Amino acid sequence: VQLQASGGGLVQAGGSLTLSCAASGTIFKINYMGWYREAPGKQRELVAGISSGGRIDYGDSVKGRFTISRDNGKDTVYLQMNILKPEDTGIYYCAADRAAWGTEYWGKGTLVTVSS
Image (cartoon, rainbow, N blue to C red; front, side, top):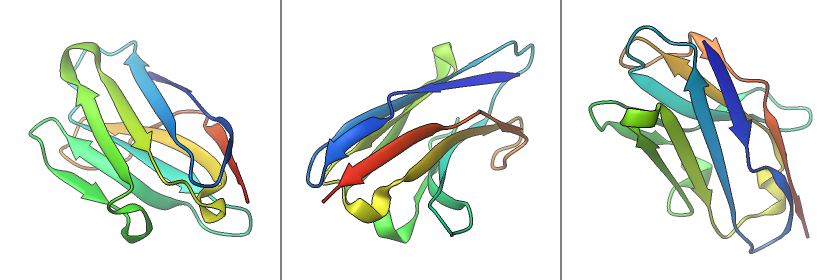
């Protein structure tokens, strides 16, 4: 399974970005897709995750600002990020799993930089 993430970049605080991640090379159903981020000096953390059944979970720091969605037919997940803050800066990784929730597969990551 290959996960190709795109949409990262440099944005000013208060701005918006949309990330997307497409899964390819699958011969089985992808149940879970999610976004994680790794900020400088910090551990990788959940940003948002979504199951094929519609369960959604967000990290506490992004609730109310970020929205995750997916296109099951295309095995693609999106992350709409609004009201970005400098502390949102980091490498954003896409993850997927055949199970309802998990991180069996990882993408290479896309860098998001929020300037103050």
